[in-house]
Image (cartoon, rainbow, N blue to C red):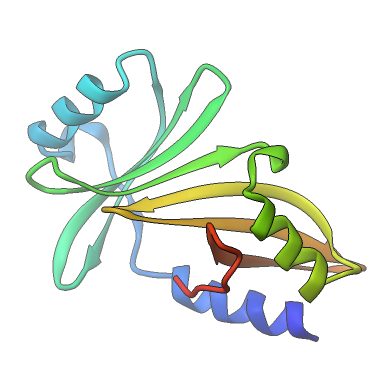
Length: 145
């Protein structure tokens, strides 16, 4: 039940007004910042959404085997970086928190979320037929998006 509630809460937090857009509609500053930071990355999808009343751009990319989603402000400044990481790269306190709080959950995947100087870890886990997303800081303390 806990996982189902967290999943519903996460879905409501992440289901914004994001809409796919063509590359030509992305401001030049955003594309330049992306190319400068990740010159060998391939764009997989681009969307725009409003955050705090301002349009921002989400670029989903693949850099070798590294999946990375980036959210840029229209001026090309990075608002958020979301990178897939191996489960083994999760900080030990996060692994312990998951084991303590959800002992029957099977960890499926993990992501590192960077917003300014704030770093959180998202763990996707399943328990039976239910799955959910769990957020923690690097010390294993639960967080919200």
